Length: 276
Image (cartoon, rainbow, N blue to C red):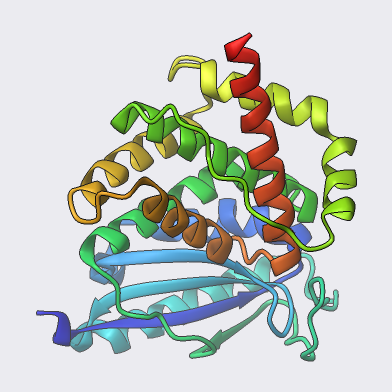
């Protein structure tokens, strides 16, 4: 059946300051509507991106026979949404370390990226992860700091799920980092807050978690159990989920190094405190 399916790879260009509004008033109502051609959507994936300007990548999986109608209706929906926004006169800006000239804000582009074939389990994980990102960010003022904070929550939440799924209580292997003094300095700026977040997640229960974090831990616990049936390697599963997070949030290599370092250091501090 796979040969009869196709991904519509859509890029929605708007300023990063408008992303939460795009989530709340544009993407979420669109995906939750079960009328018309929205029923043609089999799966979807949402990613942050900065190539040629700040944009949200919205990939829709549908049947070949329904792709044209879905694309036409999707195009009409988002053009109407952008036509009603107040930021049409603002210029798009490039994200950190980006080189290409930006597309105009409030514009829709197609085929700027490829959605690589994955397993059904990966597709399910990415779809549910996309929902979690939308739920976590739809009412926030989005900037790079908030995105990194979300990534930290997601990584520590994954380790929480790893403990629940397979009673993994070992320490993560510490990795080597370039320019570690610079990374360490950035960690020390927020060390107290990061350690507190780590304790709250690792010691917390579903009752104390916000809904999106609860859903994330549940999703990871289920994904871990199913993945370990195939690979039986904790760290391989961890690296796979890390890649999903980094890609979905469009983290730069420098941000990935910083994130890995602060996650590892915060978890190390957490385990040290437990052993006292």
